[in-house]
Length: 113
Length: 110
Image 1 (cartoon, rainbow over the protein chains, first blue to last red):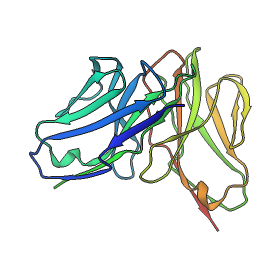
Image 2: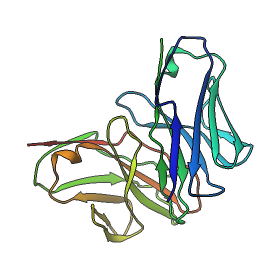
Image 3: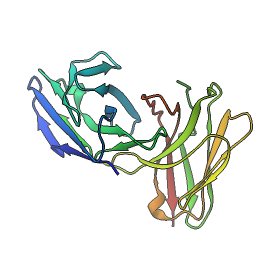
């Protein structure tokens, strides 16, 4: 089964600073990968998804970007963080069982001050 | 992608059966119905998935009527540890985008 690693687990950054969150996946090849953001007490907002190396689709306009330099690596970045970027960031992998299930990483809690 | 509607929150007591209903009027022929559970500061976790009629696993049951415009997640004999947010999602097996709604926040009381 798939295992998803995310780091860091928590991050406190000043407004205007850059961001790089990393997600790596084990136990599968050529997965679909996703970045979600969750504000406190809210549902998950899909930010980006990727069906392969170098292939990124953005779901919402924002100051974030994503990259997939390797098959099982997905990176979320920002050049200048905003206060509104605070939240819980989750990386997810589409399961390989053929059914529409996703596996989620442990998440990164980002606080922008 | 079909939109889903769930109650915002529900309360229950330990040992009771909890049923959470989700509406998905625009479900497509190829769409499956999947439920996830999320605890605070954790990623959602798959609970159960179904296409029609009834599906049961060691955690829950999923009831889907013939028209598939709704589904009900049934949690038997809940415990305090079942307090979580439960998400209902609809999508096809070949798709790769999953839209999470606000979910249902279940509170289980002693």
